[in-house]
Amino acid sequence: MTEVLLIVGILTAIFVGYNIGGSTTGPAFGPAVGANVITKLMAAGLMSIFFFVGAWTIGPNVVDTLGNELVHTTDIFTMRSNVAVLFFIGGALFVGNYAGVPASTSMTAVGAIAALGLATGELNWSVLGEIVVWWIVAPIIGFWVAGVVGRYFYPRINEWVAIEANRDGRQMITVDRSGAVPRLQFQENATRREITGAFVVVAIGCLMGFSSGTSNIANAIAPIYGTGALEMGTLILIGGAAVAIGCFTIARRTLDTLGNDITNLPLTAAIVVAVISSTIVIVLSSIGVPASFVVIATMSIIGLGWGRATRTTTLSDARRGEETRVSVGALTAEEEGEQAPRIGEEEPEDIPKASDLFDPSTTARVILMQNVVPIISTVGAYLTFRFVPLFGF
Image (cartoon, rainbow, N blue to C red; front, top):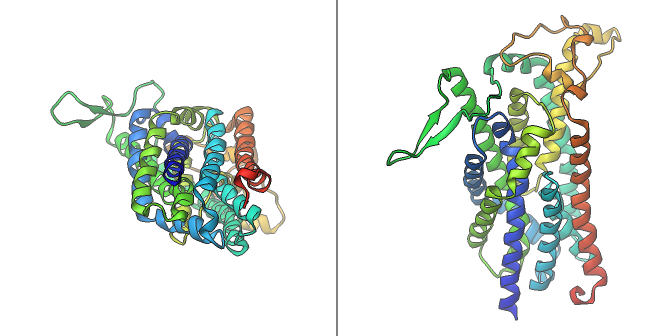
């Protein structure tokens, strides 16, 4: 019976990994795919590789936190409870993926495991408190770092990088398989600067894939690891393979949402947000804290837009009480490569509104689902472990 439950648990973990691949590929490579820099197939391949590298190197720290520290005793991680926990994690993420929305996998997984601990009286409140504190602090850090970049550095970065979205439907980077050895092929007449910009966008996607692996691999394998039934390395291999399947299949929906539907976020802004958010996630993963990239990235976008909008007001004007009309749409104030005016030279009327940057209906759907998915996982798991006799303790 134990062997059967282990097999079911592994299959459920694969289902979770499959949905993690679907929900995390969009945030990582949506900008590159939406700008026609690379194909969805290439994005899936790169995501699979760099997710695994992150999972293998830093990921074990987060696996240990969720599998050993979030609850007082790992005795509650029975094979039966593992199947239930992973079912609620994977099921909730599947709801988000079906809606084309990349939900927070970390919040979804922590919610399900915490629900198990709460229902059994074994929840380690100090560890949960530390995780929640970082969930609050990390987005604030992202906001302020992005705000400083937006006010003092973003226009210069935008002028230097000059990455423009390729809207003719052809990918900037493709793979030529006509020869014995596949090689990269660039769009005809592409300039060196355009090629460099394309590589920057792809490299940032790879960084995001790595950061996702450091934090999200635990969401698929931590409950099974807590039982001691399988070694860490074996579980990471299984989880990485499952994520790759999700990258090549269901991730197409979130790539469309993040690459085309939700926002007209300039590629330069997407790069800045990705670097800030990925760095924060990697740092938190290194100390064993599962971080929500989606929430951090959202606050970083708001901070970057706020910082860019404050360039209409100098510090001396601010001291005199002059107000600044803050708008995330400020990120579209200039085209890629355009020289930005100095601080204080712009008028507030020159700053676009946020509605010029975000599609309201899609944004509302994304925000709604990002809250609904963790709630489904947490509430469903708690009610199951608390009131269903089959899973009672």
